[in-house]
Length: 312
Image 1: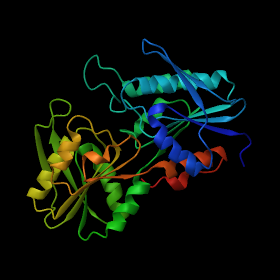
Image 2 (image 1 turned 90 degrees about the vertical axis):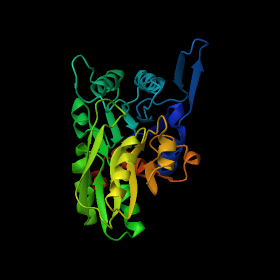
Image 3 (image 1 turned 45 degrees about the vertical axis):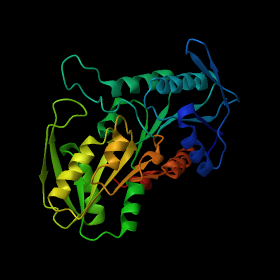
């Protein structure tokens, strides 16, 4: 059993998701006052005592960078308020795509974020579907890496699709697609893409057969949706009966909503790790990850094993 009180707080832009998590956790969000200065500086202050308790700070660190800075300030506030432990709950881990040096003189942003969170005072990190699993190794504190597959697989089964095929929109996601396929007894195909710069695809080729198949594209995030829409075009051109896409994080920047609405995709399913403007596309469906995080947070607080929450 838990041996200390728990407290839940949220950054401003993640409050909707945090309130859902708090509902399933069975506890209200803690109160925070944010003082804003005329030059844009802000100061979040925890408006209740957390001395000796376990603090959960819920924040998806999508742009702007102020979201990450607000979280760091909250961690520092909790540490200076004598919290016994500080668990950072990151449904979406910003800068995760910067996980290696892929060109000379490039930063490794994902490692920098790990350093900042640890230096600020975080004692544990909880996140979902990192862009690369190896990011867990950037931390010297415990990391609970959850998977949206616990939500997506149930949804796929509810669709009752015949001749199901799981597709990866790129070579990097081949392992993820294979894992989904093994749980669903489905076939796997891969879309091989070549790009010379970010958010721009030069060529894409299909590896595998999709004729008369119902295809589901699996990815960790959707940014401009260019890759997914291009992959959907190729899949349909090669005889796919239907094409859907599932991704843990709906970044949806630029013309993403327009691209999705005008694409061959019949449905796009994402989680609420990032706020989604569903009114901008009738094809987008959002599955909440709130209950998943709330369950794991309770298990962590009560010192229980969380291995049952890892499907893929």
